Image (cartoon, rainbow, N blue to C red; front, side, top):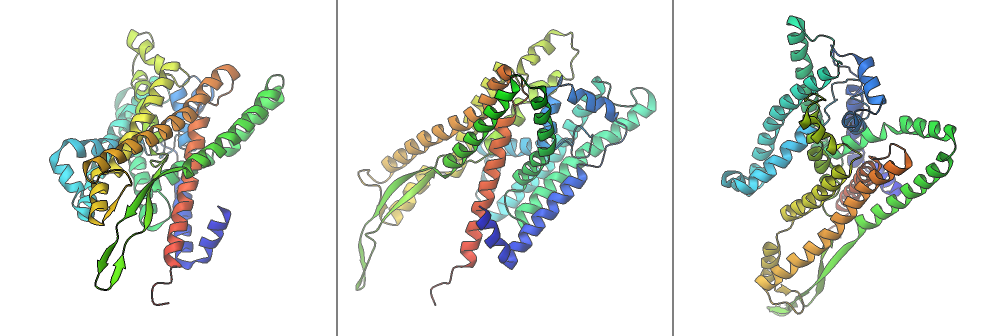
Amino acid sequence: MFDTFRNAWRSPELRKKLLYTLLVIVIFRIGAAITVPYLNLTALHNEIASGGNSLMGYIDILTGGALSRATIFSMSVTPYINATIIIQLLTVAIPALERLSKEGEVGRKKLNSITRYFTMILGLGQGLGMYFYLRGYGITEYNTGFSAVFSAAVIVAVFTAGSCLMMWLGEQINDKGIGNGISILLFAGIVSRGPSIGSAISKYWQIGGQYHVLIPLLVVLGLFVVVAIVFMNDAERRIPVQYAKRVVGRKMYGGQSSYIPIKVTMSGVMPIIFASSIVSIPSIIGGFLPKTSTVYKVFTWFGYTSWLYAVVYFVLIILFNFFYVAIQYNPFEISNNLRKNNGGIPGIRPGKPTADYIQRVISRVTLIGAVFLGLVAVLPIALSAGAGLNIALGGTSLLILVGVALDTQRQLESQMMMRHYKGFLE
Protein backbone atom coordinates (compact mmCIF):
# COMPACT_ATOMS: atom_id res chain seq x y z
CA MET A 1 0.00 0.00 0.00
CA PHE A 2 2.78 2.43 0.90
CA ASP A 3 4.54 1.64 -2.38
CA THR A 4 1.33 2.46 -4.24
CA PHE A 5 1.06 5.89 -2.62
CA ARG A 6 4.77 6.51 -3.16
CA ASN A 7 4.51 5.69 -6.86
CA ALA A 8 1.33 7.76 -7.21
CA TRP A 9 3.09 10.75 -5.65
CA ARG A 10 5.68 10.63 -8.41
CA SER A 11 3.01 11.15 -11.07
CA PRO A 12 2.20 14.89 -11.47
CA GLU A 13 -1.49 14.30 -12.24
CA LEU A 14 -2.02 11.89 -9.35
CA ARG A 15 -0.03 14.13 -7.03
CA LYS A 16 -2.45 16.98 -7.81
CA LYS A 17 -5.41 14.71 -7.06
CA LEU A 18 -3.86 13.57 -3.77
CA LEU A 19 -3.13 17.15 -2.73
CA TYR A 20 -6.67 18.19 -3.66
CA THR A 21 -8.09 15.36 -1.55
CA LEU A 22 -5.90 16.41 1.38
CA LEU A 23 -7.07 20.01 0.94
CA VAL A 24 -10.73 18.94 1.15
CA ILE A 25 -9.94 16.89 4.27
CA VAL A 26 -8.30 19.95 5.86
CA ILE A 27 -11.39 22.05 5.06
CA PHE A 28 -13.53 19.31 6.58
CA ARG A 29 -11.47 19.33 9.77
CA ILE A 30 -11.62 23.14 9.95
CA GLY A 31 -15.40 22.97 9.65
CA ALA A 32 -15.42 20.35 12.41
CA ALA A 33 -13.98 23.03 14.72
CA ILE A 34 -16.47 25.87 13.94
CA THR A 35 -19.17 25.77 16.61
CA VAL A 36 -22.89 26.32 16.19
CA PRO A 37 -24.23 29.33 18.17
CA TYR A 38 -26.81 29.19 20.95
CA LEU A 39 -25.76 25.76 22.26
CA ASN A 40 -24.46 24.93 25.73
CA LEU A 41 -21.20 23.18 24.90
CA THR A 42 -20.51 22.14 28.48
CA ALA A 43 -23.89 20.37 28.86
CA LEU A 44 -23.48 18.69 25.46
CA HIS A 45 -19.98 17.45 26.24
CA ASN A 46 -21.06 16.12 29.63
CA GLU A 47 -24.03 14.28 28.10
CA ILE A 48 -21.83 12.51 25.55
CA ALA A 49 -18.97 11.84 27.99
CA SER A 50 -21.37 10.30 30.52
CA GLY A 51 -22.26 7.57 28.02
CA GLY A 52 -25.93 7.97 28.78
CA ASN A 53 -26.76 8.78 25.17
CA SER A 54 -25.17 6.20 22.91
CA LEU A 55 -26.74 7.69 19.77
CA MET A 56 -24.94 10.99 20.27
CA GLY A 57 -21.73 9.11 21.03
CA TYR A 58 -22.11 7.14 17.80
CA ILE A 59 -22.61 10.25 15.67
CA ASP A 60 -19.70 11.89 17.49
CA ILE A 61 -17.35 9.05 16.42
CA LEU A 62 -18.35 9.22 12.74
CA THR A 63 -17.98 13.02 12.70
CA GLY A 64 -14.58 13.00 14.37
CA GLY A 65 -15.80 14.69 17.57
CA ALA A 66 -17.80 17.34 15.68
CA LEU A 67 -20.99 16.68 17.66
CA SER A 68 -19.36 16.86 21.11
CA ARG A 69 -18.04 20.30 20.11
CA ALA A 70 -21.39 21.30 18.49
CA THR A 71 -19.82 22.22 15.15
CA ILE A 72 -21.42 22.85 11.76
CA PHE A 73 -20.65 19.27 10.65
CA SER A 74 -22.45 17.67 13.59
CA MET A 75 -24.99 15.89 11.36
CA SER A 76 -22.25 14.46 9.14
CA VAL A 77 -23.40 13.04 5.78
CA THR A 78 -26.41 11.16 7.17
CA PRO A 79 -28.99 13.19 5.14
CA TYR A 80 -27.05 12.55 1.92
CA ILE A 81 -26.74 8.82 2.66
CA ASN A 82 -30.46 8.52 3.41
CA ALA A 83 -31.34 10.53 0.29
CA THR A 84 -29.14 8.25 -1.83
CA ILE A 85 -30.84 5.14 -0.42
CA ILE A 86 -34.34 6.51 -1.04
CA ILE A 87 -33.57 7.69 -4.60
CA GLN A 88 -32.01 4.34 -5.50
CA LEU A 89 -35.04 2.50 -4.15
CA LEU A 90 -37.41 4.83 -6.03
CA THR A 91 -35.40 4.23 -9.20
CA VAL A 92 -36.62 0.64 -9.15
CA ALA A 93 -40.23 1.60 -8.34
CA ILE A 94 -40.78 4.76 -10.48
CA PRO A 95 -40.49 4.30 -14.27
CA ALA A 96 -39.42 7.91 -14.89
CA LEU A 97 -36.43 7.57 -12.55
CA GLU A 98 -35.62 4.18 -14.04
CA ARG A 99 -35.47 5.75 -17.52
CA LEU A 100 -33.13 8.44 -16.19
CA SER A 101 -30.80 5.78 -14.78
CA LYS A 102 -30.53 4.22 -18.25
CA GLU A 103 -29.78 7.47 -20.10
CA GLY A 104 -26.06 7.35 -19.44
CA GLU A 105 -24.14 10.40 -18.22
CA VAL A 106 -27.03 12.84 -18.76
CA GLY A 107 -29.44 10.71 -16.74
CA ARG A 108 -26.87 10.22 -13.99
CA LYS A 109 -26.41 13.99 -13.64
CA LYS A 110 -30.17 14.50 -13.37
CA LEU A 111 -30.43 11.80 -10.68
CA ASN A 112 -27.54 13.40 -8.78
CA SER A 113 -29.33 16.75 -8.95
CA ILE A 114 -32.53 15.19 -7.58
CA THR A 115 -30.49 13.55 -4.81
CA ARG A 116 -28.96 16.92 -3.85
CA TYR A 117 -32.33 18.64 -3.52
CA PHE A 118 -33.70 15.71 -1.56
CA THR A 119 -30.64 15.87 0.69
CA MET A 120 -31.46 19.50 1.50
CA ILE A 121 -35.02 18.53 2.44
CA LEU A 122 -33.87 15.64 4.63
CA GLY A 123 -31.12 17.82 6.12
CA LEU A 124 -33.69 20.44 7.07
CA GLY A 125 -35.88 17.81 8.71
CA GLN A 126 -32.95 16.20 10.52
CA GLY A 127 -31.64 19.59 11.61
CA LEU A 128 -35.04 20.39 13.09
CA GLY A 129 -35.09 17.00 14.79
CA MET A 130 -31.57 17.54 16.11
CA TYR A 131 -32.64 20.86 17.61
CA PHE A 132 -35.57 19.32 19.50
CA TYR A 133 -33.31 16.44 20.49
CA LEU A 134 -30.76 18.79 22.04
CA ARG A 135 -33.48 20.94 23.54
CA GLY A 136 -34.93 17.89 25.29
CA TYR A 137 -31.61 17.40 27.08
CA GLY A 138 -31.37 21.09 28.07
CA ILE A 139 -28.43 21.79 25.76
CA THR A 140 -29.97 24.81 23.97
CA GLU A 141 -29.46 28.20 25.64
CA TYR A 142 -32.93 29.68 24.91
CA ASN A 143 -36.14 27.67 25.26
CA THR A 144 -38.85 30.36 25.52
CA GLY A 145 -39.88 33.58 23.78
CA PHE A 146 -38.61 35.18 20.60
CA SER A 147 -35.01 34.28 21.46
CA ALA A 148 -35.94 30.59 21.35
CA VAL A 149 -37.51 30.93 17.88
CA PHE A 150 -34.56 32.89 16.50
CA SER A 151 -31.96 30.57 18.01
CA ALA A 152 -33.86 27.52 16.70
CA ALA A 153 -33.88 28.96 13.16
CA VAL A 154 -30.15 29.66 13.33
CA ILE A 155 -29.26 26.22 14.75
CA VAL A 156 -31.37 24.36 12.17
CA ALA A 157 -30.01 26.47 9.30
CA VAL A 158 -26.40 25.93 10.35
CA PHE A 159 -26.88 22.17 10.80
CA THR A 160 -28.52 21.90 7.35
CA ALA A 161 -25.88 24.04 5.65
CA GLY A 162 -23.09 22.01 7.25
CA SER A 163 -24.56 18.74 6.00
CA CYS A 164 -24.98 20.14 2.46
CA LEU A 165 -21.41 21.46 2.56
CA MET A 166 -20.13 17.98 3.48
CA MET A 167 -22.10 16.54 0.56
CA TRP A 168 -20.49 19.10 -1.77
CA LEU A 169 -17.00 18.36 -0.41
CA GLY A 170 -17.54 14.66 -1.00
CA GLU A 171 -18.61 15.32 -4.59
CA GLN A 172 -15.51 17.45 -5.16
CA ILE A 173 -13.33 14.54 -4.08
CA ASN A 174 -15.22 12.27 -6.50
CA ASP A 175 -14.66 14.69 -9.39
CA LYS A 176 -11.17 16.04 -8.75
CA GLY A 177 -9.61 13.84 -6.06
CA ILE A 178 -8.96 10.21 -5.24
CA GLY A 179 -11.41 7.74 -3.72
CA ASN A 180 -15.08 7.87 -2.78
CA GLY A 181 -15.70 11.33 -1.32
CA ILE A 182 -18.23 10.41 1.38
CA SER A 183 -16.15 7.44 2.52
CA ILE A 184 -13.00 9.57 2.62
CA LEU A 185 -14.69 12.14 4.88
CA LEU A 186 -15.95 9.41 7.22
CA PHE A 187 -12.45 7.91 7.20
CA ALA A 188 -10.93 11.27 8.17
CA GLY A 189 -13.48 11.73 10.95
CA ILE A 190 -12.77 8.32 12.48
CA VAL A 191 -8.98 8.71 12.21
CA SER A 192 -9.15 12.08 13.95
CA ARG A 193 -10.57 10.28 17.00
CA GLY A 194 -7.33 8.29 17.36
CA PRO A 195 -5.74 10.46 20.09
CA SER A 196 -8.88 10.44 22.25
CA ILE A 197 -9.23 6.66 21.85
CA GLY A 198 -5.58 6.24 22.85
CA SER A 199 -6.18 8.42 25.90
CA ALA A 200 -9.23 6.33 26.90
CA ILE A 201 -7.24 3.09 26.54
CA SER A 202 -4.44 4.50 28.72
CA LYS A 203 -6.99 5.37 31.43
CA TYR A 204 -8.34 1.81 31.36
CA TRP A 205 -4.75 0.53 31.59
CA GLN A 206 -4.05 2.71 34.62
CA ILE A 207 -7.09 1.25 36.37
CA GLY A 208 -5.44 -2.16 36.02
CA GLY A 209 -7.00 -5.42 37.13
CA GLN A 210 -8.97 -7.13 34.36
CA TYR A 211 -8.04 -4.42 31.85
CA HIS A 212 -4.40 -5.58 31.82
CA VAL A 213 -5.72 -8.77 30.19
CA LEU A 214 -8.62 -7.34 28.18
CA ILE A 215 -6.74 -4.53 26.41
CA PRO A 216 -3.96 -6.74 24.91
CA LEU A 217 -6.61 -9.29 23.97
CA LEU A 218 -8.66 -6.64 22.18
CA VAL A 219 -5.57 -5.34 20.38
CA VAL A 220 -4.75 -8.84 19.09
CA LEU A 221 -8.41 -9.34 18.12
CA GLY A 222 -8.39 -6.02 16.28
CA LEU A 223 -5.29 -6.99 14.29
CA PHE A 224 -6.88 -10.32 13.42
CA VAL A 225 -10.04 -8.54 12.21
CA VAL A 226 -7.96 -6.18 10.04
CA VAL A 227 -6.17 -9.14 8.41
CA ALA A 228 -9.51 -10.89 7.85
CA ILE A 229 -11.01 -7.76 6.26
CA VAL A 230 -8.03 -7.42 3.91
CA PHE A 231 -8.27 -11.10 2.97
CA MET A 232 -12.01 -10.95 2.29
CA ASN A 233 -11.67 -7.75 0.27
CA ASP A 234 -9.24 -9.49 -2.09
CA ALA A 235 -11.18 -12.78 -2.23
CA GLU A 236 -13.16 -13.49 -5.38
CA ARG A 237 -15.01 -16.29 -7.16
CA ARG A 238 -13.92 -16.73 -10.77
CA ILE A 239 -16.49 -18.07 -13.25
CA PRO A 240 -14.62 -19.71 -16.18
CA VAL A 241 -15.47 -18.47 -19.70
CA GLN A 242 -14.50 -20.14 -22.98
CA TYR A 243 -14.65 -18.20 -26.26
CA ALA A 244 -15.35 -20.12 -29.49
CA LYS A 245 -12.98 -19.98 -32.45
CA ARG A 246 -14.07 -18.06 -35.52
CA VAL A 247 -12.40 -17.38 -38.87
CA VAL A 248 -12.33 -13.85 -40.31
CA GLY A 249 -10.66 -13.78 -43.70
CA ARG A 250 -7.45 -15.73 -43.34
CA LYS A 251 -7.12 -15.22 -39.60
CA MET A 252 -8.60 -17.18 -36.71
CA TYR A 253 -9.90 -15.35 -33.65
CA GLY A 254 -11.12 -16.58 -30.29
CA GLY A 255 -10.49 -19.90 -28.69
CA GLN A 256 -9.26 -18.21 -25.51
CA SER A 257 -10.12 -18.97 -21.91
CA SER A 258 -10.98 -16.22 -19.44
CA TYR A 259 -13.10 -15.74 -16.32
CA ILE A 260 -15.68 -13.43 -14.74
CA PRO A 261 -14.42 -12.21 -11.32
CA ILE A 262 -17.10 -12.03 -8.61
CA LYS A 263 -15.71 -10.30 -5.50
CA VAL A 264 -16.86 -11.53 -2.11
CA THR A 265 -17.25 -7.99 -0.71
CA MET A 266 -17.99 -6.15 -3.95
CA SER A 267 -20.22 -3.57 -2.25
CA GLY A 268 -17.42 -2.37 0.07
CA VAL A 269 -18.30 -0.42 3.21
CA MET A 270 -21.41 1.32 1.86
CA PRO A 271 -23.84 -1.31 3.32
CA ILE A 272 -22.29 -0.67 6.75
CA ILE A 273 -22.75 3.08 6.42
CA PHE A 274 -26.31 2.74 5.13
CA ALA A 275 -27.32 0.18 7.76
CA SER A 276 -25.92 2.27 10.60
CA SER A 277 -27.91 5.29 9.37
CA ILE A 278 -31.19 3.36 9.15
CA VAL A 279 -30.86 1.48 12.44
CA SER A 280 -30.26 4.73 14.33
CA ILE A 281 -33.73 6.07 13.41
CA PRO A 282 -35.55 4.48 16.42
CA SER A 283 -33.08 6.07 18.83
CA ILE A 284 -33.52 9.44 17.13
CA ILE A 285 -37.32 9.22 17.40
CA GLY A 286 -37.05 8.06 21.02
CA GLY A 287 -35.06 11.18 21.86
CA PHE A 288 -38.10 13.34 21.07
CA LEU A 289 -40.39 11.47 23.47
CA PRO A 290 -40.80 11.87 27.24
CA LYS A 291 -38.67 9.37 29.15
CA THR A 292 -41.68 8.24 31.17
CA SER A 293 -43.78 7.23 28.14
CA THR A 294 -44.28 3.61 27.09
CA VAL A 295 -43.23 4.33 23.50
CA TYR A 296 -39.91 5.71 24.74
CA LYS A 297 -39.25 2.49 26.64
CA VAL A 298 -39.93 0.52 23.46
CA PHE A 299 -37.42 2.62 21.51
CA THR A 300 -34.81 2.07 24.23
CA TRP A 301 -34.71 -1.56 23.09
CA PHE A 302 -32.77 -0.25 20.08
CA GLY A 303 -29.89 1.03 22.19
CA TYR A 304 -26.43 0.55 20.71
CA THR A 305 -25.55 -2.24 23.12
CA SER A 306 -28.87 -4.13 22.97
CA TRP A 307 -29.37 -7.51 21.31
CA LEU A 308 -32.29 -6.17 19.23
CA TYR A 309 -30.06 -3.45 17.76
CA ALA A 310 -27.42 -6.06 16.91
CA VAL A 311 -29.96 -8.34 15.16
CA VAL A 312 -31.53 -5.52 13.12
CA TYR A 313 -28.08 -4.14 12.26
CA PHE A 314 -26.93 -7.57 11.08
CA VAL A 315 -30.04 -8.12 8.93
CA LEU A 316 -29.81 -4.63 7.36
CA ILE A 317 -26.16 -5.17 6.42
CA ILE A 318 -27.10 -8.38 4.59
CA LEU A 319 -30.06 -6.73 2.83
CA PHE A 320 -28.04 -3.72 1.69
CA ASN A 321 -25.31 -6.03 0.40
CA PHE A 322 -27.79 -7.84 -1.84
CA PHE A 323 -29.33 -4.52 -2.86
CA TYR A 324 -26.00 -3.08 -3.97
CA VAL A 325 -25.00 -6.24 -5.81
CA ALA A 326 -28.36 -6.28 -7.63
CA ILE A 327 -27.63 -2.74 -8.86
CA GLN A 328 -24.04 -3.48 -9.94
CA TYR A 329 -24.54 -6.89 -11.58
CA ASN A 330 -27.17 -7.83 -14.17
CA PRO A 331 -26.85 -11.57 -14.94
CA PHE A 332 -29.00 -11.33 -18.09
CA GLU A 333 -26.83 -8.52 -19.47
CA ILE A 334 -23.67 -10.52 -18.73
CA SER A 335 -25.19 -13.58 -20.44
CA ASN A 336 -26.13 -11.55 -23.54
CA ASN A 337 -22.66 -10.01 -23.77
CA LEU A 338 -21.08 -13.46 -23.60
CA ARG A 339 -23.33 -14.74 -26.37
CA LYS A 340 -22.60 -11.73 -28.60
CA ASN A 341 -18.86 -12.37 -28.24
CA ASN A 342 -19.20 -16.13 -28.92
CA GLY A 343 -18.37 -16.91 -25.30
CA GLY A 344 -19.93 -19.27 -22.82
CA ILE A 345 -19.51 -20.99 -19.49
CA PRO A 346 -18.35 -24.62 -19.91
CA GLY A 347 -21.18 -27.05 -19.23
CA ILE A 348 -23.88 -24.31 -19.16
CA ARG A 349 -26.22 -23.59 -22.07
CA PRO A 350 -26.22 -19.96 -23.35
CA GLY A 351 -29.11 -17.62 -22.67
CA LYS A 352 -31.32 -18.00 -19.59
CA PRO A 353 -29.44 -21.03 -18.12
CA THR A 354 -26.22 -18.97 -18.14
CA ALA A 355 -27.98 -16.01 -16.48
CA ASP A 356 -29.48 -18.31 -13.83
CA TYR A 357 -26.08 -19.88 -13.14
CA ILE A 358 -24.40 -16.48 -12.76
CA GLN A 359 -27.23 -15.34 -10.47
CA ARG A 360 -26.77 -18.40 -8.22
CA VAL A 361 -23.03 -17.83 -7.97
CA ILE A 362 -23.47 -14.12 -7.21
CA SER A 363 -26.09 -14.86 -4.54
CA ARG A 364 -23.89 -17.40 -2.75
CA VAL A 365 -20.78 -15.23 -2.88
CA THR A 366 -22.73 -12.16 -1.74
CA LEU A 367 -24.20 -14.09 1.20
CA ILE A 368 -20.71 -15.08 2.37
CA GLY A 369 -19.47 -11.48 2.15
CA ALA A 370 -22.59 -10.07 3.79
CA VAL A 371 -22.42 -12.50 6.74
CA PHE A 372 -18.74 -11.67 7.22
CA LEU A 373 -19.39 -7.91 7.28
CA GLY A 374 -22.33 -8.41 9.63
CA LEU A 375 -20.30 -10.51 12.07
CA VAL A 376 -17.42 -8.02 12.15
CA ALA A 377 -19.86 -5.18 12.82
CA VAL A 378 -21.95 -7.02 15.44
CA LEU A 379 -19.45 -9.10 17.43
CA PRO A 380 -17.88 -6.06 19.19
CA ILE A 381 -21.34 -5.22 20.54
CA ALA A 382 -21.45 -8.59 22.31
CA LEU A 383 -17.87 -8.23 23.53
CA SER A 384 -18.53 -4.79 25.00
CA ALA A 385 -21.30 -6.17 27.19
CA GLY A 386 -18.94 -8.64 28.87
CA ALA A 387 -15.70 -6.64 28.83
CA GLY A 388 -17.09 -3.38 30.18
CA LEU A 389 -15.28 -1.37 27.49
CA ASN A 390 -16.91 1.00 25.03
CA ILE A 391 -15.98 -0.97 21.90
CA ALA A 392 -19.46 -1.44 20.46
CA LEU A 393 -18.53 0.68 17.45
CA GLY A 394 -15.07 -0.79 16.94
CA GLY A 395 -16.11 -3.26 14.25
CA THR A 396 -17.91 -0.64 12.18
CA SER A 397 -14.98 1.77 12.46
CA LEU A 398 -12.47 -0.91 11.42
CA LEU A 399 -14.58 -1.90 8.42
CA ILE A 400 -14.82 1.70 7.26
CA LEU A 401 -11.12 2.40 7.82
CA VAL A 402 -9.78 -0.73 6.12
CA GLY A 403 -12.40 -0.72 3.36
CA VAL A 404 -11.77 2.92 2.42
CA ALA A 405 -7.98 2.44 2.50
CA LEU A 406 -8.15 -0.61 0.21
CA ASP A 407 -10.64 1.03 -2.16
CA THR A 408 -8.45 4.14 -2.45
CA GLN A 409 -5.40 1.97 -3.10
CA ARG A 410 -7.23 0.12 -5.89
CA GLN A 411 -8.25 3.39 -7.52
CA LEU A 412 -4.67 4.64 -7.40
CA GLU A 413 -3.38 1.41 -8.95
CA SER A 414 -5.95 1.52 -11.75
CA GLN A 415 -5.14 5.15 -12.57
CA MET A 416 -1.40 4.47 -12.53
CA MET A 417 -1.95 1.51 -14.85
CA MET A 418 -3.82 3.74 -17.33
CA ARG A 419 -1.06 6.36 -17.26
CA HIS A 420 1.76 3.86 -17.72
CA TYR A 421 0.13 1.95 -20.57
CA LYS A 422 2.38 2.37 -23.61
CA GLY A 423 -0.17 1.52 -26.31
CA PHE A 424 0.02 -0.46 -29.51
CA LEU A 425 2.46 1.76 -31.42
CA GLU A 426 5.35 0.92 -29.12
